[in-house]
Length: 120
Image (cartoon, rainbow, N blue to C red; front, side):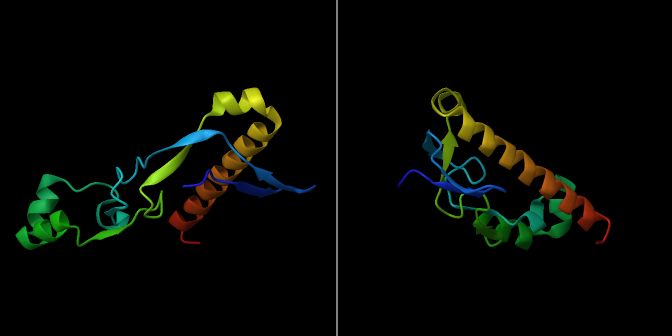
C-alpha cells in the first residue's frame, strides 16, 4: 500500500500533505474489515437486551449478519497512523495545518450530530 496523500483546500491554496507514519491494524474493526452496524449495537447490547432479542438474533449477530464495511478503514483492514512527533520535527507548518483541519472537522461533526439530535 502506498503512503497516503492528504489534500486540503485553504482560503489561499490547495495543499498536498504527506504525513509521515506507518500502516497499522485498524482499531475499529481489529483488522477484519467489517464491524457490527452501529445501528444494531452502537450503544452496546446488555445481556438482558440480548436475551430479549432471542437466540436467533444472537446466532445472526455472532455470524456477522449485521456487519457492515468498516467505517474507519473502509474495509482495507489497515489505517495510516501518523507519526506526529516526526511530522512536527520535519514539517511543522504542514503538521499544524493538518491538525487544525482535523480539529475543525471534529467540531463540524459535533455540530452536525447535535443538530440531528435536535431533529434538524
